[in-house]
Amino acid sequence: LEPDMVVRRQEALAAARLRMQEELNAQAERYKEKQRQLEEEKRRQKIAMWESMQEGKSYKGNLKLNQQEVESGASTSSAVPKSKPNKKPLRGGGYNPLSGEGGGTCSWRPGRRGPSAGG
Image (cartoon, rainbow, N blue to C red):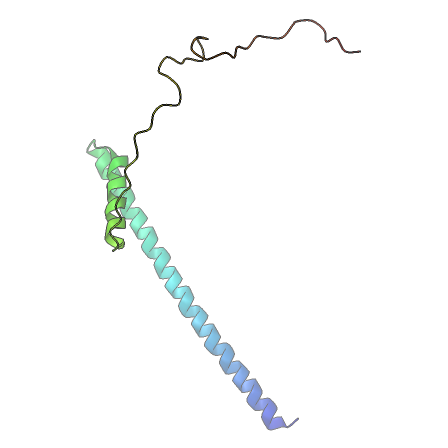
């Protein structure tokens, strides 16, 4: 092997490593900035929640409204909320499992007392 080729190859390798390291550093900076923005948004939401709680408002409902505004502003597609169909209850209104009435044909009785009849 020629020494010139070995030196050139090592220099190219070092330059490629340097480029990759710079790209990685730039990605890390972007990630840190994104995390900082998320933390700032969370802090703002907590402050808004605290202020609404001090005013005596329902802070959870206010927080949900703020999240819906953010989502609607972020998404450009017009999403129509689906209306829930009227569902009938699974059992009749007179069903009460504690009273023993209206439950159908099933009834539970405790087992016999005493030692088991095994051998």
